[in-house]
Structure formats: C-alpha cells, structure tokens
Amino acid sequence: MKLNIALLAGDGIGPEVIDQAVKVCDAVAKKYGHEIIWTSALTGAAAIDAVGEPYPDATHDICMKADAVLFGAIGHPKYDNDPSAKVRPEQGLLKMRKKLGLFANVRPTFTFPSLIENSPLKRERIEGTNLVFLRELTGGIYFGEKGRRDEGTTAYDNCVYTKAEVIRLARKGFEMAMSRSKKLCCVDKANVLETSRLWRETVQELEKDYPEVTVSYEFVDAVAMRLVQWPNSYDVLITENLFGDILTDEASVISGSMGLMPSASIGEHTSLFEPIHGSYPQATGLDIANPLATVLSAAMMFEDAFGLKEEADAIRNVVDKSLEVGVVTEDLSGSNKAYKTSEVGDWLANNL
Ligand code: IPM
Ligand code: MN
Image (tube, rainbow, N blue to C red; front, side, top):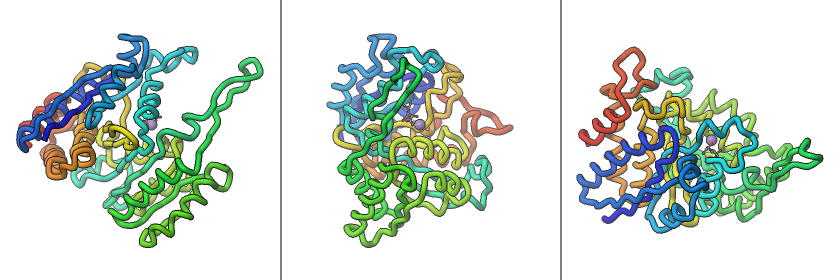
C-alpha cells in the first residue's frame, strides 16, 4: 500500500520524538511491503518564527491531501507568560482541529504489565485499566465567543454546543462501546450547566439506537475522583472539550508516565495522530524525551487510518518488548541505565 503521511513535528521535543516514529514506521513499511511518502510541514512556534502564522495555509493543504497526519507537539515557553502575545503556537493546533473538522479526540489509557510499579497509584487500583476517552474537540468553551469588556477588567469565554455536535460525538462513543465492553459513561456537569443538560438529554435519546450499551451519567467532579480510585471500572467515556482536556491529563499518569499515551483525532477530513504530552521545552534537544507515545500514535495511525491492524500490533509488540527488556528513557529507567530518545527509536526499528 502507498501511505501518504503529513509530518508535523512542531515544537520542543516534537522533532525528536517524531524522528523515532518515522524510523519505526519506515521499518514496519519495509517489513510489510508498504511505501510511505512523508511530507513535512510547519506548525506551532516553529511556523510562527518562519512565516508568522502557527498553522499556515501551505500546511493545511498538505494535511488535506495526506491520508493521515502524524503530529509531534506544540508550544513554546516564550509565549506562556506573555498574555499580550497576538499569535500563539496553540492557536495553530486549534485552527488545525477546526479546519480539518477533527471533532473527536480518542485518548486511550491503559497499563503495561511491566510498568505497573511506575504508576503513582497502587497496583490493585490500576491493574486491568483499559479505558478510552472520546473528547469533543471543535466546540465548547474553546471555540465560543471570548473577549473583554469594562475596559478590560471583565473577561468571558462562552461555552456553546449544538445538538448536532453532541450527536456526532456521542454516536462515535456508542459505536466504540459496541466494539469494546458495551459500557459508556457520559461525563458532564448537568447539575449546573445548560450545555451539559443538552448533552445528557441528547445521549439519553440515542440510547434507544444502541440497546446493548449500558450508559451511565456522571458528573465531571465525581469522575475526576473515581478515575484515580477505580480507573478499571471505566470503559468508554464521552465528554465535552474542556472536561476532556483536564481528565485525559489526569488519566495519562495512571500508566506510569505521560510519555506513553497516544491519541487520535478524527472527523471530517484527514485524521491526526499525536502523543498526548506537550512540547516539554526543558528537554528540547537533549535526546531524553520518551518517544513511545508518538510511536504508539503511529500504531493507532496504521490501524485506524489505514486499516492495517497487523502492522499496528507489530509496533505495539515491539514497544512491549522494549519495556520488558528495559530499553527505556529516563522517565522510566529508575536506577537502571537510561537510554536516549534516539537509541530507543533505533532499538524499536531494529527489533520489529
Ligand atoms: C491538548 C492540549 C491542547 C488543548 C492545547 C495545547 C491547546 O492541552 O491537546 O490536550 O488544550 O487541547
Ligand atoms: Mn491538554
């Protein structure tokens, strides 16, 4: 198969972790007889520096023409403490999500048997955890009207959802639940928020189309708590943009390192695959960042974008093997030898 992939390395450690994913993808392609055509494009702070815009039209064209987008990370500290900055790297990510119509963000959380002790949570709490968040990604408070009034002393961010937006996300959640253990949790704040009441009522209406799925409705504050108490009681969770942003960071530590969890963003046009961690500016250029979240995002890409499950499993298996034999970066090495980002990538590619 010919695989046309747009490569958006982005900022910070993005280019370093993307390099490892490319090595692994090329090795898989070689093994299974595929041809990958990589097209690199600018995004984030790197794009602002080069062309003054975090998601340039040229990048969008490349993404639209590709079969999948593999993305590194976005963000640069020089913008974080400068509230007056007119353009920010993160705007690039939001614009990309909107323009590619990526309304559903799939963020799995699972544990690796060999890393159970790396988790801040106790073994008996997390063993068997295998849940997935479907976070709405192009609506809600992220995209509502925002601004200042009263000479700048009052600020507002509106949270708006249409029924159609809830339906398309929720249907994906029901479908995903059908392909897993048929359990769906709708996370909202329906005791306070009108948008949450719309979510809840819409999901309730959809229940009749999926009689086999057991749906629970839980408030976001309670889910934040139960997620660290009994993560293995959840399967598929659907939620709005901001709740999903917060809960998926919380969930990511269950596995033992934020550097492990992949994600996919799917919707109307080309799907995008990215690690859930950020640009980790302190580690930029040091060759120490964990590349596994990006490598596992590439595995999701093979399965979800190309329908190549065997190839995806080959990547997951070699990642498991690297963890078992301790070829890991410093976030996971403990008192043992820490491997460099590039060494982990080489090992994975050579052991596929
Ligand atoms: C994420 C990130 C982004 C978000 C930022 C960088 C805009 O935190 O992908 O979760 O808030 O969605
Ligand atoms: Mn986030």
